[in-house]
Length: 471
Image (tube, rainbow, N blue to C red; front, side):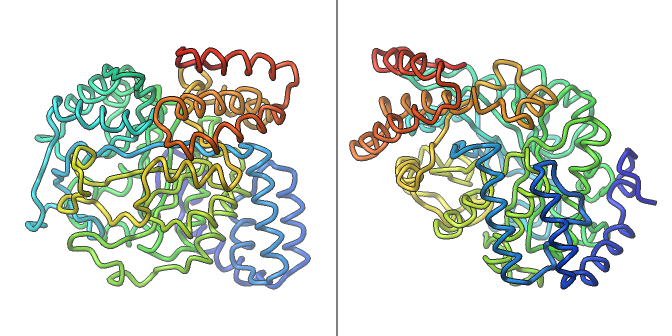
């Protein structure tokens, strides 16, 4: 029985409800009057439920699809402006006891060397990331209670926060580790994590259990209910996502939105971020082994509809995707991207990109400076801001500011100030030239005119050597 307020996975992600939704969507995909009504509802910027959004996903009318894309682009601008938040993943360990069929870290893979970063090695990795200009990391680790216990993760986070190198500092650590207990989520909260991120991979329970044949991750309910335990443990910013290409994308799309609806219904706060990764080649993983790959066009449409259905959420795209796909999809709703990423354990201190411990092939191999330059030339503001987390603007406080549009009064100035830091400390001459011109132009776009002279004053302080200024 479908119940978004239930704490039981099979009730808030109801297989029966998803199948009925997909049947309804297929039946109504050419019902253009209904499509128009749904689009009118979407224009209110309050979001759409999984059933309405699924009708739009099924609709193939070119004129209506264009309207969806245009609306997604406008909603993205309304909530997040032209800012793109920058981050990088940091892989701590590829030891894992699970048997996931789509991940090269699975227990039976004897081809890859197993690695785990010592705290000293973590320091070197973090300094390398700071020297690129990164301020925000997402730490990743395989699930292994012996090699990667929660104590190791906590110690690693403390190490990351402790490192100050030249003008470098990691100001926010997001965590992407396996589902765990309320007690462990409390420990993560206590060491100051940002967002707790966990991908579902697939919401279809039968497919999930097939794809996770062994290990603790095999437990569908425990995994799917992780965000509720995280919230109970005091973590008020959580990030969800599915691995598109593993199972049927229409099913996953509906399940993803139902999960967002559940978090909103139970906790009053939907997902802080939604990620849209796709299955990619890796050591012993061939995406062609899975029958559900989706085209770039459909991938972009899914992103646009997530933006329409969950307008307040941050949307993340990684270096799994090519520069060409990233360029298309950013316009349709993405607000966070990684840059200069390496998906191997210990990859940032190596001059040549190592491939032996990569979790997946990286399709965008540009440096952070090249990505920043590209974004600015496309009219975006690369943002290294972490102010909301350090000012307590998280959970329901962030969502209320975001939904009302007031967050722009903080985020736009903060993005410009963190970009200025990057230009002063790390940018190539061409990137700095492009960035200075962009900042000058964007000061006039700050919503509150009275803030503009204050921002100019802060920018002068940054030029004089002051760092970490924010509203």
